[in-house]
Length: 129
Image (cartoon, rainbow, N blue to C red; front, side, top):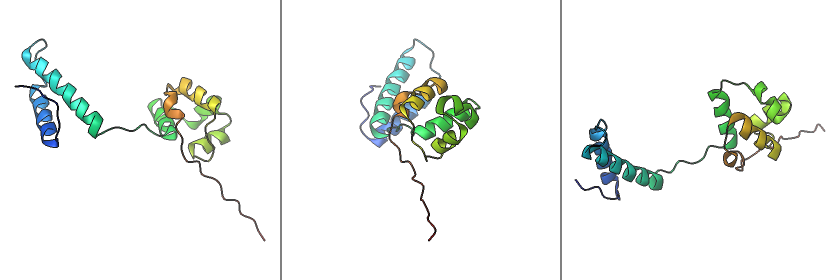
């Protein structure tokens, strides 16, 4: 069977079926080569048609906390005091460049995720008249 670029959803579905059929191919066989070729085509199609966006900076931090079984207290050395940590996690305070550097190193997060812009909630000040 000839492997060609995937241009339609039907061809994509067919390629996925072929990958599933070939999934247990023995290494160094024509079937393994075919599996690889289909995989490359599916990856290219998915990259173009189903792009995965980067997580938000705060989403990435929360994920890293969960992944490393950490608490907001563990971010104090990277961000500042606990009140500031909570403000950042609640999107009430923006990340600073120093925080981004510390979080990138401390949580093993790519800086390009942490430097993305995101909305910071401004607190409404109420005055009594």
